[in-house]
Every structure is written in C-alpha cells, then in structure tokens.
Image 1 (tube, rainbow, N blue to C red):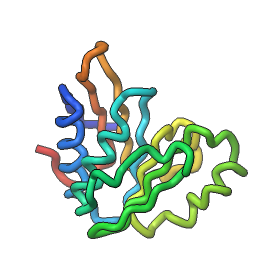
Image 2 (tube, rainbow, N blue to C red):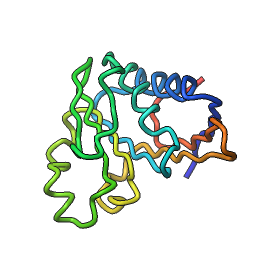
Image 3 (cartoon, one colour):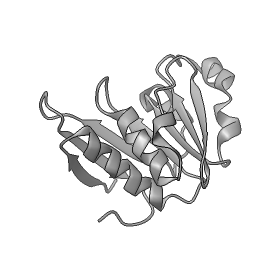
Length: 146
C-alpha cells in the first residue's frame, strides 16, 4: 500500500497536520489511527477538528465516553477503541450506525481492524525518540498534502 510519510516535531505541528488533513475531508471518511500511548493521537484529532470548522478546545480523548460527537462543516465522531475487546463491545458503541454520517476517527484502531471499511484512511504514528518528533505514515487519503 502506498503511503505518504510526514514528520512533525511538536504537538503544534501535529495539530497543524491534522488541520490540513481535516480541510481535505468531504464528510464520509473513516480515519483509523494506530499508535501507542503518548503518540499524539488526540493532538492530531484536535487539528483535524479545526480543519472541519470545530473548536479544537472541545476535543479531548473519549477514553471513558467511547465516542465524542462534534458539529462543524460536517460531523466528527471521535472514537476511542482502547477498551473494545469483542464484536459485542464494538456493536454496543453504535459504531456501525455512524458510518456514512460524518467523519469517523478511531483511536486504538488495532482493536477493531477487521471491522474497518476497506476504503479507510490509515494513519500510523510512531516516535523515533523520546522527544516530540512523530512520524506519520498516511495512506488512503484523497487529496494532496503539500
């Protein structure tokens, strides 16, 4: 699978990348985020929200709520799948009812890999060191990142 690799060097750059991607979205995408604790997933989603016209200060990790809904130029549904361990758990989140009704972004996508649509946007986040540098491997995005 072809991917674009982008390096950010601070949480602000991570948010800016999210904002740029958010500005490219039409409103029916599923974005699967992969990466461990502290990789900047929520910072990225704050930027994504800003790119969709949503106040990024309203964005936080939905760890205990499972999903946060945000209204902008299109709806943003921000899922945290960390505690999802089975198909029953996934169905109980209402995840499938959200598909096609806005942008869905899932943190901890590793836990629901088999349930994600084939045409998802995949973003793998890694850290080459212990500082704020992050490597984003992005595939499936329609539109051009400059």
